[in-house]
Length: 158
Image (cartoon, rainbow, N blue to C red; front, side, top):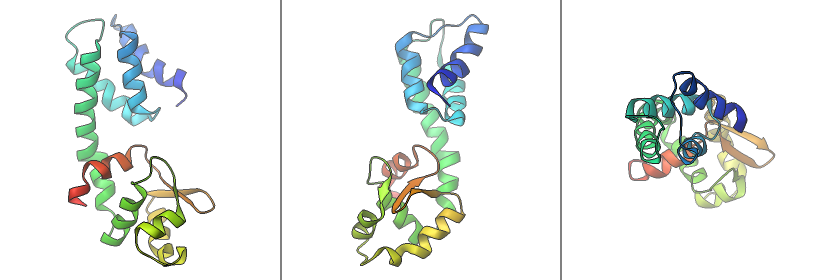
């Protein structure tokens, strides 16, 4: 969603119920959701449950993000992670080391492979499963924002 659409999706229903957000609290949730509709829904639900009064405060936003992230980890991210084989998980863990989209040569190097074709089967399978995609030649990214963050948070379990 665009920033304006995301803001309306979160603040609009609250305003209709006579509930306001402090601008910093609204901005924090919007930043965390990254315009992804499902994340807005989860964080919005959590902040609605956490906030004791209007306006919604920064502490309410922080608690909602923490609880929402835990919920996303247990549901969305864990289920996506479990769909991958051990080798596919290794490829995704190598991708998660980057702050954004990953260059295939970097992934090859991190995985101790010799050439990109050594990963082609795993890459193609992950694309077919809808877990990653290639936005450009030689570049891979996760189909769901924050998946890399999930993998980094759970690196000891990977």
